[in-house]
Amino acid sequence: MIDFLKEARKIEPEIIEIRREIHRRPELAYKEKATAKLVTEKLRTFGLEVQTGIGGTGVLGILKGVRKGRVVGLRADMDALPIEEMADIDFRSKEKGVMHACGHDTHVAMLLGTANLLANHKEDLAGIVKFFFQPAEEHGGRGGAKPMIQDGVMESPKVDFVFGLHIDGDLESGVLAFRGGPAMAAPDSFEIRIIGRGGHGAYPQHTIDPIYVAAQLLIALQGVSGRMIDPIQPIVISVGSIHSGTKENIIPDQAILHGTIRTLDESTRKRAKAKVTEVARWVCRAFGAKAQVEFEKDAYPVMVNDEKVTERAKNILSNLSGTRVKLRALQLGGEDFSRFLHEAPGTFYFLGTKNPAKGCIYHNHSPRFKVDEDVLKFGTASLAQLAMEFTNPKS
Image (cartoon, rainbow, N blue to C red; front, side, top):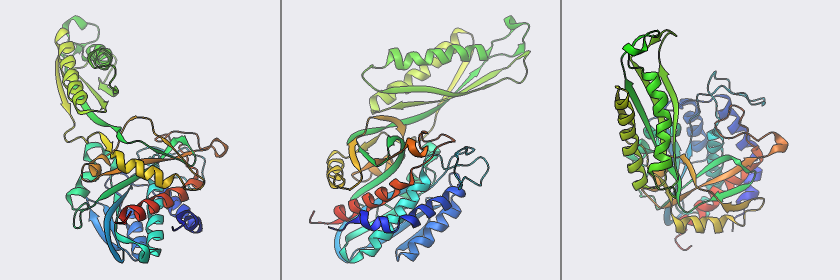
């Protein structure tokens, strides 16, 4: 068996430098042109076939083994977040208000490392490995997974197994965490527009105050998750923004709430969306206002990891030196990798990067998020090992 970790250690400085280069120049969803250019150049250097402009700014790399076998897809997302970086590192983002706060820079670097390792063992590879460098994971239902799939990355030849890896600031460095079955939530974004009647703040009796109604609705929405849904079912309803008004003595005409519902099964998802709509209309009607409720179209589904593939992946990586495999708790975060899992069996797993000794203590999406770069070699080696094992028709 090839010792991919030993080989990943040899290219570790290059993996880290690629990560830092991407970190310095983060790019938002569907703007990942420089990142895609870097990826394309590296893949061609490794000798892979490359297709660009996939799903917008995505890149597809293809590595063909010398013998017939299965087809494995490996995915890394490329986009950054609209966050001003505050991490104390010397390769901080040079783009104002944009930061790789979710670790996608590490995902790209690790997958490029994996492509390098596997290209060096092309003679040992049976089958085909496809490398998906995806745009816009942070873009909700409009994320890059769907357009990449529409552009055919899962076909010609058809992908038999698909894998994704994500850095996690809550897990200890070196931990590989897996969960079979439902693993991450379906995220449904919503907008509730409360239509009232504006007027002078001194004479509220002549108005229908949408801000007051919004305050009542904010509380009432928690009754959906707390009293209208089976308490055994995981669910979160959060309102992340309320916008209304222009001046302290003017009661506005409208207030707009934006929020998200997170669920882990389709029946709960449908019921929660229906109840949020009902409650919004009931509360608004009670105070003489009207409610317009809209949900984001084409939101991605619950992420369901294949049980058998997940168990096999855990067993394969349980012998990866320097790491520790554990069960991942259910998560109400969402991931559009779920779209790939609707096309082929696979699993999405996590690599811990929490290391208090190095100041790596902040969660993903924090402006102070830092990655323990010592774990990148583990991610690179793990993806290479999974690709080698799952492409092999005899394994």
